[in-house]
Image (cartoon, rainbow, N blue to C red; front, side, top):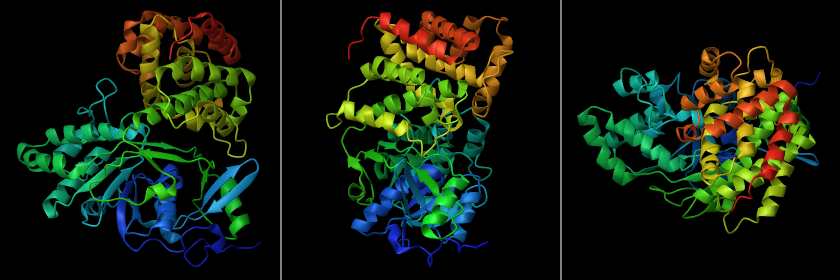
Length: 506
């Protein structure tokens, strides 16, 4: 058996078209050392630096998991990105990281890095769940034990917002150099949301700390909005084998990704940035239309595909979208419920964009898993469902496929007693799973409507939908069809009912 050399500085093949060595200086500290960052922002940064060099090395910070950080250190900050489609596999090595920390083990090093004078950008991909905000108010969850502990300052900060504010405090006291905080997560107005949470944390500090930090935050820290888009599945041995076959080296932490990648940002940076436009990024004065296009047409539809697919016993998104009834439901929610709720940016050709979405979902070589896409639905759906649903309900139209999305989610994560949603749904991770199970236990036996009403009253999807009991009733009807007759019957029910509704006006 041949033992391959480990990927490292001396074993990066020239044909990978990546950097042979990382940048000499760190200019970016990134919170969230997961697959998405390493296949998206890092790749765009590598392409930008290939065009125009600069002090833009990335110090990656994992939250608690040590596996990726350890492997990257052992591989001299190298890892492979495996771009895969049915007709082609392309492997590159970005080599833009200057270090890898684990916040749970090296909290002081993380704060020092955030405060370092050379750090011009603090970026993050911590998922929607990582912002510790209240689903009802969209403000900082001041009742969360971790937030309270971070505000007390009795130990190292544990939340993302706590880490950022404590790092900014240290920065303000050391040299007060300006810095940009750039969210790369799927939140509407992610920069505005991050700014609001940082300020709410600061407002909750003791008066002396608050008064010292607030004026500097207003004048020296920028929070641009951004939109990110790339499908990045979990790493498996399939991708480790692909790297070994193509590069002749062993990589413990390669990242699989689709060929498509998109990044849209406001060009509001307090202390400079890489020339990301040469790495394929788009800069605009108004990110929101791109955000909504992606959050609803891609992410919202993706969620419905995942939930219906899991309930149909499908392990991957390509297997799911290959089922005609799921493809029909995807078109129904995309064109009928989501598209009328947004304005398509002028430089996006809609039909080509939608065609590309279906091609991306059907990428059998990538095999994005339904359990991965369906996880954290309680956080994801409140970003995607309520606003378009309310738009239709206020216009007197029932958004049947959005109701189907909620019903399928509940069927996967809070299945009724005696019903098994299957192994793929059972494997979905969701912070609200226990709370939803408690709501189900308290609901009158057999009453789907009472259960759905209690879920909406809990604030899972905000407050607005509680004003429309017909929506809860429709979700309950579709939940009942899912349990009794299966996902194909529920999708057909939603499609028939949607066809009978008045045509929505965009």
